[in-house]
Image 1 (spheres, helix red, strand yellow):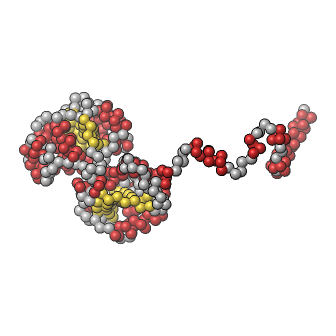
Image 2 (cartoon, one colour):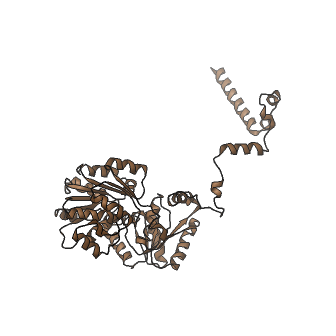
Image 3 (tube, rainbow, N blue to C red):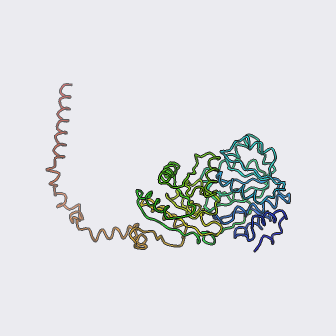
Length: 444
């Protein structure tokens, strides 16, 4: 499949694709769309910027337009990602179309969502928490849902949504088409795919085929105290939009405050912000009103801003897999970008785990002193060699210990024990104790 014209889609969908200038499908779209239109379940592994969202939105809208799907539900781990999916769906729907789409996310007034649910939208996009809330209120009916998308499933597991997903699935008919997408396919994802999917087709788009090569990655080795000063110098020499990742909410607030004091146009986004504030910050960043956005990993999946030129990992991510999502914020849709990572001595083990994901067949190249592969050449855990070397080089070994049962060894007395202060004190204590006991016996 070279173009969308080969799929023989609905005329309204072709008009929408032409409007947003979707001409050539990406790899994930080429592989996934025909299978989805053929009503197959899919387990897909694709990284950010690969066109994954459109890969399931285009065939979903085709099924809705042909009235083969009455209701569909798409679950996403974060509000930002849910809103991003809603934006993609809305861009593919013509104004005159009767198809309605609704996002159900936390941080928004629930009464507004209740009013919009009365119009019976065909496509529901939401986070597991808010969708569960509506199901408990009986304001959301999924009895007619025949299409389910579980997007960023690995992230949803990390955030502890597995119980809520199981609960949501109880409200959906067993006969349905299910699509599951994840950046990484771990053993837990494989187990869930067997639980949720039926005869699923596995699609994997390697990270190094489209997006990663155009992202220039650099590693800066420095101490924790030098991070801020180096970042300030770095920001002063760079142009364009920059996304700086910090691992904690407190760290985000502090760094944004420090950069603001230095005169930078900066704002912050993290889990404590209300939805309207988040939307406002992202809108200002998208429109270039602020140059620097400091964020936690909550923004790693869900921000769709095509013109981010630099991603800076001020702190390395807690999960190595999140590194891919972070740097995927730049180099969108084949554009060039830069990703800088600040690595301290305490981060080196974490960086090695990230390198294993980036280059699974390559030996670790990160080293302290510049001797490549020095860490790998040392066989630290080869105990046999370790103990042999000890035997050869032990200059302080006492030959008398070789035959402990010799009479010479038994008769040998320790000068240290005889003259030590400890032994004298111990004897004095024992003598006092014995005298006390004798006095007690005599009294009795």
